[in-house]
Image (tube, rainbow, N blue to C red):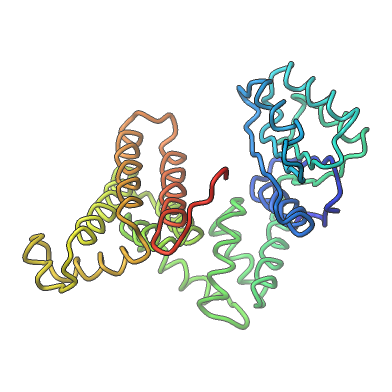
Length: 334
């Protein structure tokens, strides 16, 4: 189910299909291949909807400093006609020092753009939705195998029946099962795994976010939402965790008992906050508090989609920790 290998020198590529996880993996495969050939590649990721023509032109224009560029244009099915025409025009004389990837979620809209890329010799990654139970079962088996394990037939069906068609959740569950149980996964392992997942709370999500576990925090968030945990409770847990870590980090003392007295918190909460604040800088925590405040407004009606607002905030906070944390150096231009 993974993306086909991509030649680093490919100048045009189309990632197409309804399955978001497979699209993401295809883009990642292109990025890895290009980076292997051009470690100093200049990267641009653009969203087609509402994208100004000038911004696209800037990304496609050769840099004054030379070097290879990777430009990924997401959601080209939503591109305005002028933008689509500009992309089609580019295929007539593509820059040899630029890899251009257009990402289309399928359907008839802007189909001519995809056809123009294919006619120009673009490589294509098909990311069609896995609509049948058999396809999803095969996906699970492949994910477990990739994680270094094996899974019994009844366990595969139990997992597919429990989770359904969400490939990200299937992938996360497959990886976690191998991590938890190793070797061969059976139906009993799947049942025990789901029993544990039912206990996911907003604080479970917040803990993963604060320690910088991107994949784990997204996995826990999706489980929490699937189990019906309220958006506001998750947002409150994240905000409480970030604020507590900031309060603990702002004081010079590292004695949990002393901090508990000063902050009027139970010692167990201080100890947990000390663990979670490791790797954070004060500046990063301040930025994360701002994100948490925005999230609070979003889940109370400011955002059109509270699920998306939560996931976006989780990703932003984890990124802030990675880019501003102690011992790290923020990357510019990325």
